[in-house]
Length: 319
Image (cartoon, rainbow, N blue to C red; front, side):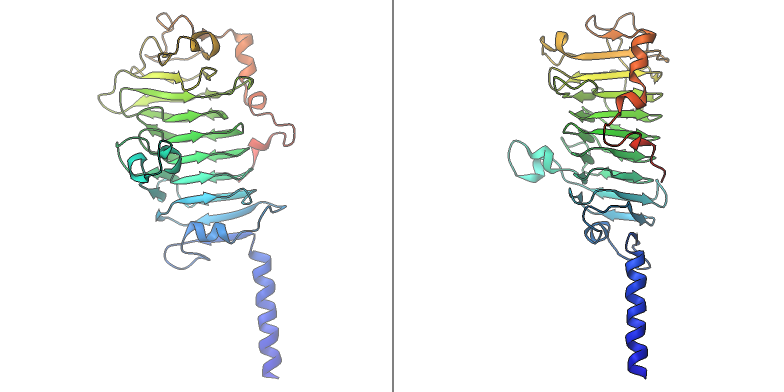
């Protein structure tokens, strides 16, 4: 009889696990399902039909994280943005992998579609020591909600031709700290410059309609920073538009740089609309940048920029 009770108990336990395996908890104190974030990711279903969630308890997780292509429809949600910290310290000269060392440095790499990151700090802690990515995204329809993305040069890399949504985020860096070819809409974010340098370095593909769009954001700086460009073209078809945002006095009057690429002055698209603050005065902007009309600015609304024919309004995910 005891044998059958044992078998029955094991059967019930297996059913319980099967019911719960679409939601995991990571905790450093051993009270969750896993001790590390990567272990939890590695134990989620591949290409799930329904969204899977990993809840991450407060703690400092020194991990180099990767979401593979098959980790789609996954949400990683921290307990508290300031206390759930993912950190690593790779940087260009440390990697020893050749001229493209930068792209091997991310603390957190996302290659899966339909991912949501929320209430997390993602940090490259290498310091001001050259190229060192905190968050790299090469996917489509990734939502970053209420996160801190911390680093110095090349903090946030958005590559490929996907579309991404950043809301209520804090993003800091020194040089080209938001860069890449993807389309991204930043809403109500704080963009913090830590050095006299450049904020964005878009490499938008030639036939892509939108690059980086910032709406209702605050561009601020740390103490002593006073000569910052809004952006420059990593590649000549770069597109960056800033609307309805507050620009601090660290923003240079000319606003934009051509990165010594004269051709970019006719092929790139750097534009502003209805900005405020000491750095928003458009009178001395470079002549090849644009001040949008109200009609032109209406084309930079979130539903238009992030429209996706397969997943309408994916950026309205409730988490």
